[in-house]
Amino acid sequence: MGASKTAAFTDTDIHLAKYAKALAHPARVAILRILLERRACICGDIVEELPLSQSTVSQHLKELKEAGLIQGDIDGKKVCYCIDARAWKQAQQMLHVLFSDYKPCDTNCC
Image (cartoon, rainbow, N blue to C red; front, side, top):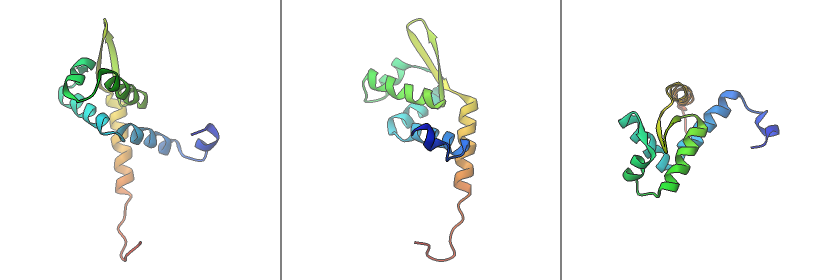
């Protein structure tokens, strides 16, 4: 989305969309589940858990990192990934607010 288009949306909506985009692929959700379970993980360990190539897993890790949901520390030739606690909490709060804003209709709305 171009800069001129994003000006029409709130910062909160832009951040929430960034998180939602990162969560919009089942491989990324699976990677997040692995990281939540293990607390931290080397890319190669994640590859062993998923039916995906190393390059595909790396691309998904890159998307999650760009969204801010994970962080990675370089240890020699390996990168150890973990959940970014601050961003995770922010995404959790934003999603909660969005979903809790729903109020059911008294009648058939659609």
